[in-house]
Length: 352
View 1 (cartoon, rainbow, N blue to C red):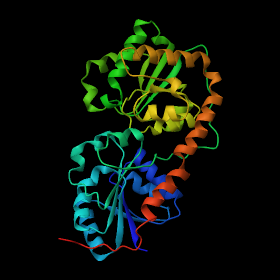
View 2 (tube, rainbow, N blue to C red; view 1 turned 90 degrees about the horizontal axis):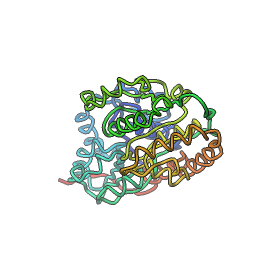
View 3 (cartoon, rainbow, N blue to C red; view 1 turned 135 degrees about the vertical axis):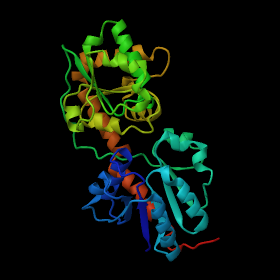
View 4 (tube, helix red, strand yellow; view 1 turned 45 degrees about the vertical axis):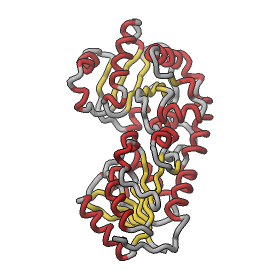
């Protein structure tokens, strides 16, 4: 059986790399894995039973892939993100009997321009959620991203008197709901309820919002605390609610993290967050985008502030549903089937 090559375009250790790392840890198959040299992800892969191929130059990597395919070393190439798709399109055109698999993980990669050179005959696309699949103009396989859930939810829900600790986790930027956050804080101030909450922002401030007048407004409020990078375990240990304000989240790994930590998530019933909430019975804590969305978010947060102690059974049931739909077994089985389960006998060849 010829080898399969997995390529991680990014060397960071964000959601897509975490999913790939979990998959490589759980699969019984063995792969060659190309990853940016000296990166955080590179260090995470050391010790796993796979052959790691560090690379410094993307162009040089795909030149090597060209010759590896030409020599018949690999019969299938899997790219963990769509950022390298232009290289795959060219290789798929040249090596018509080779198989190529591209994982589509972010909304930007559903745009038509990304797929101008797509060769459908020997390229398979994978979507991580219904939300992404519906926006991708080409057919794709649907595999919900995995999360390695604990046996039981951890932490202890807090509610009652005193300000409730609200965690907003991730980059502070427009695409993650910066404008929605500013409007939420203004509405809390209008309702004279801002002091009921301490809103902690865990993430880097991205350049696109640094000059926004809303940033100066948020920084002037003592109830809004910019904490920067903090270890996830510490974030969930000191938080009562996770507030997620992106309306276009592709899937929402943060949802899995929050529920596993026993922390309710309040957000929008749209994108991947809405998808998860509906599938796991948590949509009552999500609000529909629209004219009254800000007031609705506040109502959800206030209800949790007064009734959070009642939520543990609901969160436990939701996590059990998440394990079935988004657990490591289902993901590993589905991706194994695509990478290993077919066309083992075919050889690659170049056709110019």
